[in-house]
Image 1 (cartoon, rainbow, N blue to C red):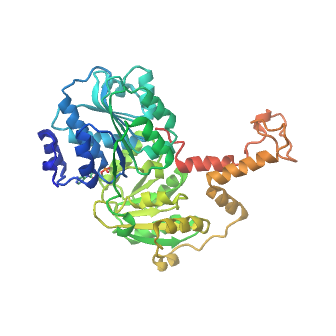
Image 2: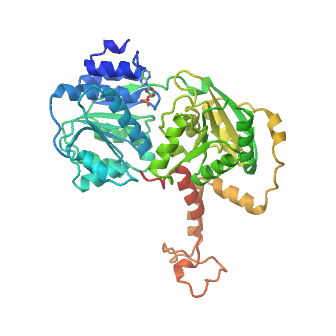
Image 3: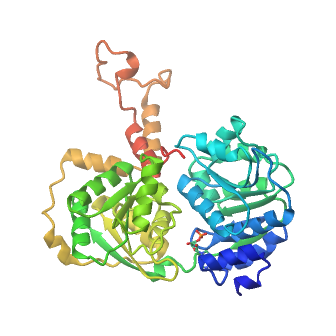
Length: 464
Ligand code: AMP
């Protein structure tokens, strides 16, 4: 099928040609006709499948058809996304597809001053792309209202729930007018997502499910390096210096702190790089991403949340500097390379305490990752001996949220009854520091450090 065979108006056909699409992707072919018939849609698809155009093009067509005009401080279509990067990208797509029409777009997200966002809403917009927190904030300030909404898209629903947006989503949905067309997209459909979809979609929505263009695993060449934690930086540096063909390299770090550390090591070695994660300002993140896209920098170091949904073509190599403890995350990560039919290479570092994660990944992907070139180990400094302290640090860093919670609840259980207030209690034999208020006597509550690390690893502290 060709795009020209789809019932899309001339300005949209022109835009599609201008961005270089000829044939609709499977999700576009399946979704666009149903959406043009004003049906609700449940789409099970990941980024990379072309799902943005699958919903943007029919929405634009219906906006053009309806002949309505936008009223001040309202929007006609709302696209809700979990992160600012995704919001910006999706608005960019709408802008491209609407470039030959008079349809207006705006994008709102947290972490930046809201003044210009509010200004953009004063006259009303046709398409509003938003993250949930900032949207509710601006609705609260009466900068925008959803009363004139005609189309509602909830994108990346599973990620939204992972990031704890369920209450915000419910609040937004409660503000939507009854009469609207709904589109719901999620990469996975566990039970809680199915339930959420049922509260948003009208009965009997069209269901469209597409696998990623091809299972990335099949097209990605993988290599594994078994290496102790302390020498991962040296190994990364060595591989990058030895292989100039590693041109556009995405490095995944489990934590924000780790990502910064990696960039310091690489910068010292003269490798042009930048990190993106939740502690970086929006401008710094956009700048880093722009420089990576235009190949001004060779390496982008990212945490999982920051990298999610970032649409960068031609990533030549993905490095798993740390293995993720959720095996599905590994698949998401390495899927950033080998896009659009190209081949890609994924290189994973596995320290002794990550062997369990490696087994889970190999089980999920049904691929035994072959070992990389062993000669590189000879070029690295000799391994340093682990001290009891460093081992403890590693063990704590690896503690999963469940383990941390189990440990925390075990320690709480150990406390005598009647002593279970939320206030931290001194450990047995621990003398309260004199002259200190009680709550400051013990700084580390059981599991608190591990929980903090986990939060960081999951990017939960990264607000929109
Ligand atoms: P998405 O899944 O919407 O994030 O799209 C992934 C990538 O595919 C983006 O770079 C799009 O520009 C591109 N794309 C979307 N639809 C098509 C198409 N029909 N033909 C070629 N590329 C496309």
